[in-house]
Image (cartoon, rainbow, N blue to C red; front, side):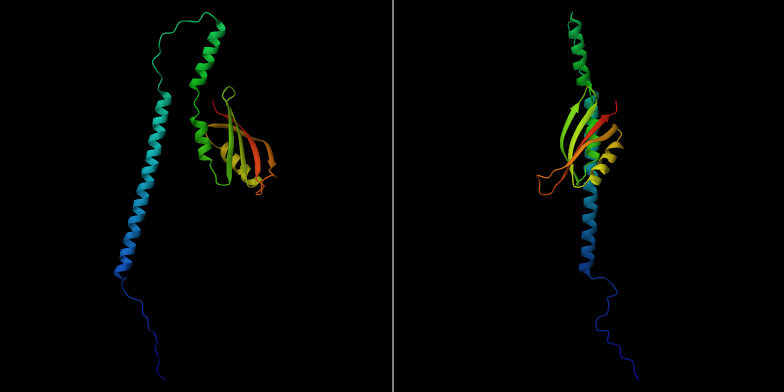
Length: 170
């Protein structure tokens, strides 16, 4: 008995011109997006360097009259220390822990104690604890502790609202 071969559609040996054109367009789009991503990262790094440079620039000291009152000197020293405080490490720590499952509701800063009080909402307690753990691992954070949490029953989604006390590194 003779063997019958019914292969009506054989695969072409070489890709068609339209296939090659799509391949080249995809490669060009990939190269362009990689270049745009790298340019955005370079711009971010440049802005971080400019912020650091601006934080380190001190205005020239102008001669000021010496106050005779000791309380005025203490107040002046306190204001000078507040002006010299650098918040960029705290902001960098918060930016690096940004998450779609946790929403930061409010931030209350106490510069005298080098502390932040963060109020945030999460879908579950596990999401909140994971976010606090990532915050604790940041270089500008000395300690992050969950101080309060409650399920918001007044909302349809019933989010978990929690309060985190963050001690910043000197």
